[in-house]
Length: 490
Ligand code: NAD
Image (cartoon, rainbow, N blue to C red; front, side, top):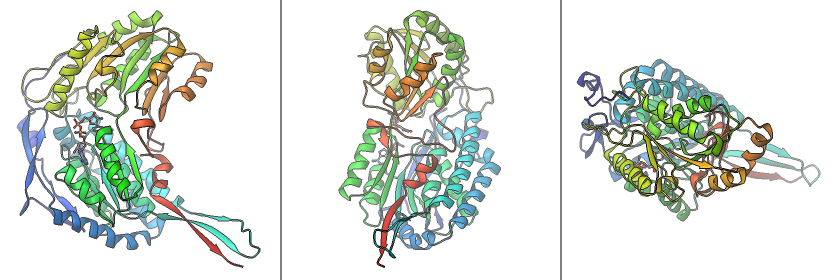
C-alpha cells in the first residue's frame, strides 16, 4: 500500500471558491452574515468560508419558492424538460470545474469525482424525460354521461437536505425530480461539501430556470431544517443522510402532516456462496467496498462467506485490499483518499478496536495514516462475530468485516437481523438460489453476482430504518406528485 501523508499542492486549492446562497434568483456571499469554514480533508486546512443563512434568508427562500410555485407548475412539461436537459449538458461541459472542488472538499479521488459528474448528468437527462410522463387518468364513471378524472398535481414547495458523500448526485436527484414534477424547492446541501450543490444550481440558472424555483441555503443544519420544515408553505420534505437525523426530520414533518421521503443509512450484507469463482468475486467486492472510501449508504459492509471458500476469500481480500493506492486524491492514479472528517477517524478506531476485542483478526490495514488530514488505511477484518459493533452499526468508512456461515437459512437470518434494509449483495452460481433469495432478503435493492445498485434510470431506496420512497427512476418524480379526484355530474 502506498500512502501519501503530504498535503495536496496549494495550487489545486487556489481556484476554490464561489461559496454563496441562492435566494430568489440572487446570489449572496458572506457579507453581513456569519460564515463557517470548509475544510480540505486531505490536509485538515480551511479552503473557504461558507455563508451561514440567517433566519431572514430562510424565510426569504421559502417565500421565493412559494411565489414561484404557481408559475412553475403552470409551465408546459416540455419546457421543464428542456431546462433540465440544458442543465445536464452544462454539467457535462463543466466536468472538470465541478470535479476538482468536489475532490478538494470531500477527498474523493478525482477520477471518481469526474464519474459522479457524468453519472449525475445522465440522471438529470432521465428525470427531464419523466417531466413528460406526469399525466393523470380518466376513470369510467358510474354515472352515465358523467366523468371522473384523477389529476396528477405537484405537491408544492419542497424542503430538501442532502449529504456530503455524493455531493452532486444526491442533490441533483432531489432537485431534478421535484422540478420535473412542477414543484419548487429550498435545498440545504451538506456544509462539508458545498460546491457541488451550487454547481447544479448554477447549471439550472444558466439553463434558464426562473428565479425562486430553486433556492440553495447553508448554515446550521438543525436550525435550517426546523425553520424550513415547520414553515406552513413547505408541503413536502426530502432527506438523505443518517438514520438518526432522518428520524428527527421525519418527526418534524409528521408534526405538520407533511409527506416525507427518507433515504437513510444502510449496512449492506454480502452473501457469498461456495459455488462462485472466489478471485473474480473478491476483485469486484474490493473495488466496491473501497469506492468513495466506504462512505456510501449502499457500501458492502458485512461479508458472509460460506465455509468451503472462507479461507481463500479472506486471503485474497486481504491481498487486494493491501494493494490499494492511497494518496493525494487529486492524483489520477489514487484509489483511496482521506475520510471526510476527524470524527470518522475516531469512529474507525472505535469500530476496529471493538472488533478485535470481540475476537476479530485484522488481515489488512487497521490503522490511521500519520500526518495531516483524515486518513485511514483500507482495512479488512476476518472472523468478526455478530456482536461486534461493526456488525451492527454502519461503518461508513474503509473497513470490511468478514464472517463465515454454513447454511442458506442461517445466512438469510443473519442478513435480515439488523434494522437496516438498503443495499444487499448475493453471489452464487445456482440459478434457483439466485431466484429464491432476493425475495427473502429484507432490502430495497438486491444485486446478484455484481456490485450494482442501479443506474441513472432506476429506483433507489430502502426498507425498514433505511427509509422510504425513491431517489431514482420514475418513482422519484411520482413522489413529488399527488392525485386529485375531479368528478363531473352528467
Ligand atoms: P451526521 O449524521 O452527523 O451528518 C450527516 C449529514 O447530515 C451532514 O451533512 C449534516 O450537515 C447533516 N445534518 C445533521 N443534522 C441535521 C439536521 N438536523 N437537519 C438537516 N441535516 C442535518 O453524520 P456524519 O458523522 O457526518 O457521517 C456519518 C454518518 O452519516 C453515517 O453513519 C451515515 O449513516 C450517515 N450518512 C449517510 C449518508 C447517506 O447517503 N445515506 C450520507 C452521509 C452521511
